[in-house]
Amino acid sequence: MDEGDLIRSAKAGVDEAAAELCRLHWREVYRVAYGRLGNRAEAEDVTQETFLRFWRQIERFEGDRLGPYLRTIALNLCRNRLRDSYRHPEVEFVAELRPDASQSADEHLVAREERARLRAALTELDPDQRRVLELRLIEGLSAAEVGRELNRSAQAVRALQYRALIRLRGILAWAPGGREG
Image (cartoon, rainbow, N blue to C red; front, side):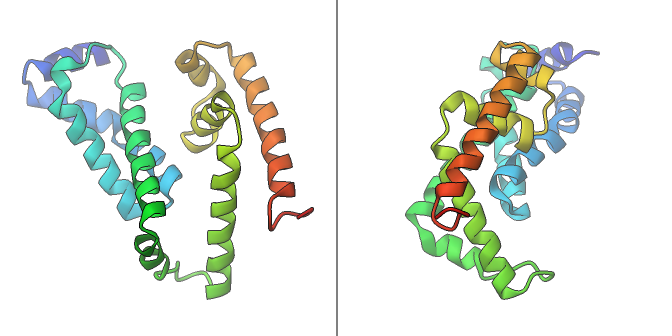
């Protein structure tokens, strides 16, 4: 049974089809959330919320490919969480008080600052460049998969990724804490 058939069966209330769709996409959605948030518990929460939101509105879904739709839901949920953590920094601070046991306190602070610099630098890229980097580097999609999602050729995706990385490197070099700043 292909994915389109599974989606139609899940819409019709077949629990096995719904379970199979979850099995097919759970790891991918988790990888997106973890890549964006860098926290296992948060990524698990976002993954669960992604599927809950999808199941609540499954009757409105009209495609035959669920992956891009679920990634979009997950990325939106991640953006909401990141935005809320900026609005309520004490929440982020509390989470950061529990450093990785393999890191010293100094290493943890440096890693946190580097993540913040990278997030800030990504906001300076144009939306196409940022999206290509998200899909290629965070979600781990191939150039061909990104091309299908963005309606571009794989070669165009690789060129856009290259330009985005060059621009990102320049932004980070001149940002506070960078080599030149």
